[in-house]
Image (cartoon, rainbow, N blue to C red; front, side):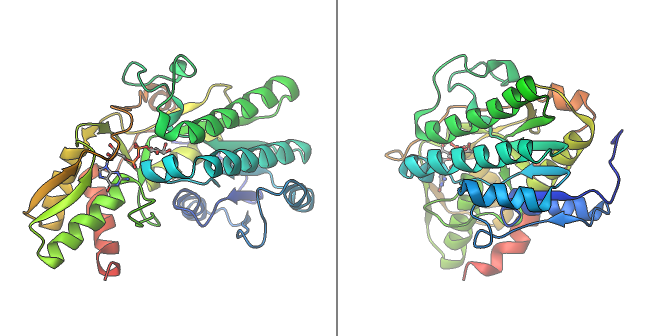
Length: 314
Ligand code: GFB
């Protein structure tokens, strides 16, 4: 339950409103009655362009900013487009956070990622483990950009008193996800691959890695609720983990999706593909203590998503 919801008329800018996270935040805000929401598509406002971002903030002067714009992707995209992941994410964050401070935004929420934590950090991952060891190499550029975003919020608070906070979500899924098999995250990739194997009658389905890494998955509607909750009720310097607090192996995830899709063929693991981080389970005691808990169970969430997308694969 939110303690301090702001006036319903405040002006809110959601950066990245066409993405899975940004669109979920807009849905959540609209459902709560917030109607003064500003959004711009990429062709209307290039967030990597500093002067365009400054002009936009000076003209609009939003009260609240949700920074959900980012270049994102699964393990393969992170590993291949390393320069773009570092450059574009650094530029987007630096431009928006600096312009938000210059135009006296009341509050900004920056979205990071669980990959900011060291590859071998003790599990579950606490907020305190940031910068205590080396990162997972496949997504090091993305993680470094996200760490820079956290530090911009922290240092603009220290130096200027800006009320900028950061949320660190675990792996996400939900409406508006990317189903491109080269660039997507594991959960949408598995839904698509297993569905295709079923409809084509394939005897086996090709999956990447060994299946042994463990991951935690949060429905994006739960994340959106967490973001709005933090925006309204949290003013701390430290970033806040957002997750369910439970994980499963990629093999267990594949088996769950097979049972939802109704596929009984074999799982064929291509061990020439990377496994990535062995495990990244979030410690969510901090956000739970702030009054938020994930509500959508993994099986239920995947069933919902599968219902919505299964007819679109062709
Ligand atoms: O979601 P994902 O691509 O990224 O999951 P990360 C990768 C894990 O799933 C690896 C296995 O263990 C893969 O070997 N996997 C199995 C597959 N089959 C597939 C498949 O068909 N596609 C994909 N993509 N994976 C991401 C970071 O790491 O986590 C991002 O790359 C971000 O930067 C996100 O931080 C939260 O979970 O490894």
